[in-house]
Each structure stands twice: as C-alpha cells, then as structure tokens.
Image (tube, rainbow, N blue to C red):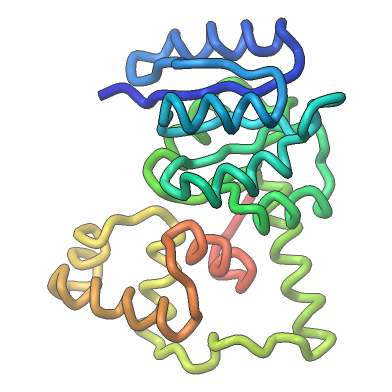
Length: 218
C-alpha cells in the first residue's frame, strides 16, 4: 500500500510542485492538499493520511504549529513532518513539543524530503542534520547548567546500547541479531527503557537519544 500524504502549504505553486514530486514516487500518493492549518486538520481527519507534510507558516490562516498540536490530539496515529524555511532551533523545539515526528527545511534536496516522508511513516523521527546538532547542543548546555535530571543515569549499559540502536533505525529483529539475543529480550529491554525514561513512542526515544548525544551526525 502506498504512503498516503496530505500537503499543507499556503502557496498553490508549492503544493503543486510537492504533489508532482511525491506522486512521482512508486510508493507514495498525495491524497489531498490544504492551504492553512485548519483545513489541514479537517482534511487529515477526513482522509486519514499516513503522513501530513505541514508548512509551519501559513498566514493569514491557522499556522502549522497550532495545527500540529490539534491534529496530534485528535489523531495521534497520523505522522506529521514539518516543512519550513526557518533554520532556527526555537522552531525545532516548538514543533517537537507540538508532536511532530520530523522537521526538514524547504531548502533541502528533494531526495532528503522523500527520505524524511518514508522515515516518519515507519514511525521513526526525522531530524535534519542542523536540527539534530541543535538538540545535541541544547543537551550539552543543560548538562553544564546541572539541569540533566532525567532517568538516563539509571539505564544499564545494555539498555543504553539498545537505545542507540533503536535511534539509528534498527528494527527489534536487527538489534537481536546484532547483539545475539532473542527478539523478546530486545522488546523487554525496550519496554524497561521507556518505563525508566517515561517515554511512550519510538520517535520520543529517537529524540531522547539525539539529546543524549548517542548518535553521530556528519
């Protein structure tokens, strides 16, 4: 089944161009478009796409940040990939807090956008390299200020190892093969990691791992 995508952008020419790019992929289909956040939420609830490609700034209508928050509350199973011209960590933190699974710049190459759509559709988080570096920098600043008071210190070495592999995109089966353990063992470790860190989804684990500096970005 194709990845069904809804495009939300206030510029008709951008919607048209993105539709052509996405529909040209053998595994993707644009099922609808919207010109502002309110329309994006309404159409997403009606069409139930797998991924919403959400522009962050859509004046004069409802912006992408508000729409992201509303849509994730109403339909948490729909993945949201924010597309924006703002290469600013303030926007990054806000969209992640709103529930978006990814963040990519409008200046990014087409191949990166297509990869980002596939990534969030798999239930994983997608962060553009500059965004990932911003998260790592924010974490380091927190450590220097003594604000790192979460549950990372209670994770075992094996749990930290598995957390890093999860964040890098490995499936439970691939992790089990790499560590020479059973899939059930990996699933048990993953459950314990989520309990200790008070996280509920795989994208949250990925964002957490990025903050902890467990991934290497070029």
